[in-house]
Length: 364
Length: 274
Image (tube, rainbow over the protein chains, first blue to last red):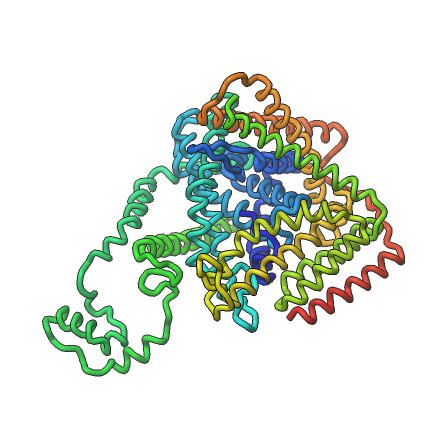
């Protein structure tokens, strides 16, 4: 998954360096605040650990072997912020010293593996582990799942970055200048390998390391160690708040999975017609049968035609252009829409909390 | 010991030894008397990084090929053996990128310029150009990067990164990480070797997985223990959070001359690359 130099355009690389920078800054500030002078040796040694763990050959079911990034195990033990920095340091040394992954693409590699990976691993681990005791098998499963989800999320981001290149950067003859495969090839090609072998390697390492620590050194898993340990003590509400909403999250996930059921519905959604449907004989027939056999107007309604070009949806028909299967498109659209709404509410909550905090501080 | 179990343990051992071998090779080459070795490490970064970026920017194949020729000339003048470059860069990149680029020759739509014998798949002009772009670009950028690494002691390269405005604390962390990588590699190597010496029968896949993950767990515990020990050692020597670097680099007239020369090459390449 280490993108070498030459696969991404310099502008994409610059954007991804820019995207990674605030996370690095926030992670560094957060870890420094929690660890003070302990920061330097901890990051140095955990960075070295992440580097070495990437060299481990992990036997996988089926007789093959694979390499893990170690982001799942690092996140569970160090917390997401310290893990983000440790994996970034390991990737930097891999790129600069061993030529594994490019220098121009270092920002992209860190964004995909260190930042997306550790945040996804943290979210999945916290969700799946809940308040289970430190030595419970649920935590082992949660860590394994976290590693698997993290590496697949990283692979998805990598595939999207590679898949965007041919559409954006071509030479005068139309040949792609960088990674040559569009999204509809890059995503399946990347995801098949990661959903199977590479994901399994991460799953085995994350679950196995947590299982080993449960038996030998459970203190390391006590509060998700370092980065989170003091954080957990200072903000218990951030953990307890998860409890009451857990059933809602599960229902939301179920509803997302059920969204493709709409494909089974026959006929046409009344009133949801496009201007072009009025000139399509087959659609005209459907409109008429949905309207108690009242024939639609012979010409396209002018107002509808004029306004229909005012806004083009990014995901027309509930699927981005690169998604071929409608079922997958529906699930993706559900995830994207729900994520957007949740994100907006979180943003609103954060702004409200900040304002409340400022007011609280100002008042006597 | 079964072939499978021997394979897993020995492949891990081989990965660890490869890293150590790579380091010894780099340290050996960095001590040779060549063009890049004689330059101030800061100048080397300022010279080579723009060439990597221009290779990534280029929109004409001949510019990338010309930059590759510059990289080869630099390797010759720096006494870096072609065998080392071929083994460490060219063959690795060609295998990896070639494998990725090959299907593009047939998959990218465009006018056909030939067909693959036996299979009859059409080779398209844009597909072939895309594959050549990807391979030459990756080879050129990787050659420049590896030249910088092979011709500069790691500690100097790290300090030189300050020229890119990297915070001192990050440079110190990277330096320490580099040192502890070798300590942890040695620890992991010893763990696997001692395990290998005690294995007298075949291990099943499940047992092998348990062994590998337990080794990773042990290494993690040892790493965190080590970070605590290092912290106490640093504190005992007076570390209070501030870090300083000794800056012993001196930029001479030859460095300035090379800087001007390569700046001209980079600007010319950038001009033609658009």
